[in-house]
Amino acid sequence: MTVSLLGAADIRRLAAELDVTPTKKLGQNFVVDANTVRKIVQAADVRPSERVVEIGPGLGSLTLAILETGASVTAVEIDHRLAERLPQTALDRGVPEGALTVVDADAMRVTALPGEPTVLVANLPYNVSVPVLLHFLETFPYLERGVVMVQAEVAERLAAKPGSKIYGTPSVKAAWYGPWKLSGSVSRQVFWPVPNVDSLLVGFHRDPEPRGSEEERLRTFAIVDAAFNQRRKMLRQALSGIFGSSAAASAVLESAGVAPTARGEDLTVDDYHRIALAAPAA
Image 1 (cartoon, rainbow, N blue to C red):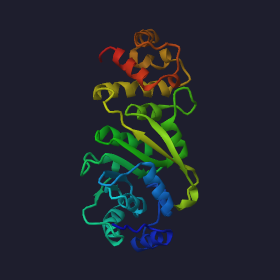
Image 2 (tube, rainbow, N blue to C red; image 1 turned 60 degrees about the vertical axis):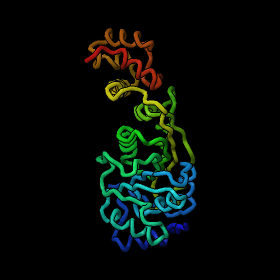
Image 3 (cartoon, rainbow, N blue to C red; image 1 turned 90 degrees about the vertical axis):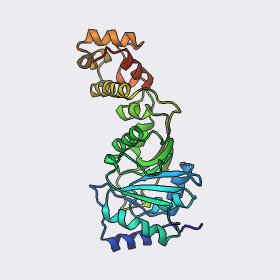
Image 4 (tube, rainbow, N blue to C red; image 1 turned 135 degrees about the horizontal axis):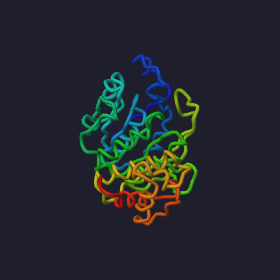
């Protein structure tokens, strides 16, 4: 199977045909360089016969690079014009029928994915990247790994470790599902239009076993939110609203083996989970 990738001229021609102008509202920055989309697919280690989900395929440059490996793709696209055109683009570029399934929907509202894909690969809009990633990890437990291209600051936050200034709510919530690491940089010049921010690749592998129940996750995430809403305060103060008082918060923290004088950025996801388990039932 030979799949022909899109070049810059192809992408501009398709956009003109569909009367599509990339919009900031949808965070659309189309990749116009074949080497870059192949780099993303290689970083994700996509293999033949795997099922991949792509969020926001746009005009299809990354989609075709995934399909080039022999994998099949479920593509979730919010723009109706792009969703309608993508299957024809794939056929025109040598993709066999049945290899691509397009879901015309808002990724934040999708609750089922055809084919139950195990790999996530995407060029994510900067304005919704973290909520979309967390929604997919929460909703689709069969997703085992993935690589996404996001704004550099977002990627660094997702991969941040405790104790760093950029470690925060996204870092802890993403780590609930498994480890994250930076997987490469991407030049601004490969996008149309050229964005005013840098991009990085960031990847994850889901832990083989769930960290805890859904109830435990919700309790843990509520504690994480409270801790980072007042990140300069000691945890006994930052969590006093959840537990009723600083004294009550201190008791829960000590029960969980966490110093009440610690701050939110000092704790691992396991620490936060232990606090949730030590907390009195609501």
